Image 1: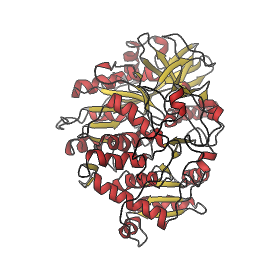
Image 2 (image 1 turned 180 degrees about the vertical axis):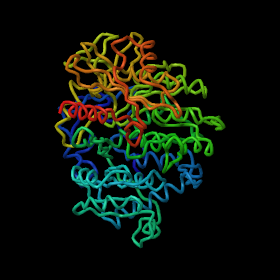
Image 3 (image 1 turned 90 degrees about the vertical axis):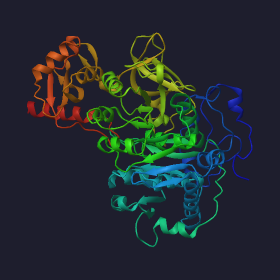
Image 4 (image 1 turned 30 degrees about the horizontal axis):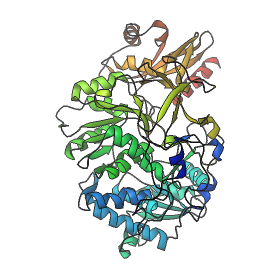
Length: 570
């Protein structure tokens, strides 16, 4: 019998209470799960360090036993049919759901029968965003292993660290991304390439495998993936997520806010190595029976023509991409586009309004976190209020608290605390108690809750600038800068100052041909902001440091300022 082919009894915890404090190391429903390699389960935080989970209505409920690969693929085929398009590539190749399932099952056979992968083994996935990478991820899910998807741009030292932390035994790697993985020289790592021309290439190994693959009967709360944070502030943190978590993000944000249909075509810029991309470009479309366009090159200059050519209807990207595409819209037919989602960093109100004025489309702003897998505060359609992030997604709760965890009154800035059906579970990391406090997940963001229940982003907690006793939010200053028609990008950080503690420094990228000066921008800012918020220093840049998904790396600008200050004093 296929997993979950008949209803199972929900967990006792879900029946008994809205809030489930902590969680057992063993999956609920049975004494042990399907994992024979128990490393992931053994390295979950102790139950008392888990956040409280919301597992009752309106949060989705799941049976004790489920495999998310089976649910996302086999169940979708059963409901919508095998002939519908599933995965699209930039060069026009389209895989139907039937073809995708056949490929996934062949890969799963190779994993378990040829490569020796057993349930619970960690499998590294590496390569550009392609249908083959997506198929490998689904095969790892069906095989009951644990996926660790990394960026194609990750370097050897980063890969070695991740492999060490997660004790990775196997890797499926695009042949074009093999060099740095080989340089990482991970002891005992078995690397299988795909897309190459060798006799042991995965694309050739699968040719000898036929027939359906029966998904491993995993427990709903066995670990399905480990997503690593970027590690920009120290050792990267591995965030462990369960099989039911992958469905929960689809059955909360996607179902209630995005509301996709089977005829939608998804596309976007975030790679599958980021949970923003994994959800938006694979989990959400598969859960809805829709198709997804997987682009190897997804910068704004590639994304815009792809939206037109493939008639994309649902777009996931970062605020910077929306702003960049604004100057390139002429002559592009975006009539198929109906949903635009922004996450990864705060969406400035100026960018929202400019995109709406140019396209008539309301960007769905959202905040998510690797620790919580995807978006948990958002709003869509007429519920959108530009300048705010939104309200908690159905199934989630949020509040603003002080450093002691006490809830603050509306209108007062504080730390954002969140809980829902998914929670932070770091891989054997003492920083678990920094992120989870009093049963809530503290995201590291400063927010204000408005009296009408909407949450407004202020800054990352470490992006607040304190100058002469004033608390100044860098994103607010950036938003004012971006209202200037000749400012293409802006990043605002604090620079240490003996007199004021910090001063506001604006790093600005001007539009091509602009001759704006610091004085002219200073006049613009004084007309839009209180004097204490206006930048005292303007630095004109050719570009700003960003991650692969377009997230602004303000910490690099702060480090540059401190280095420059040290030189000044030397």
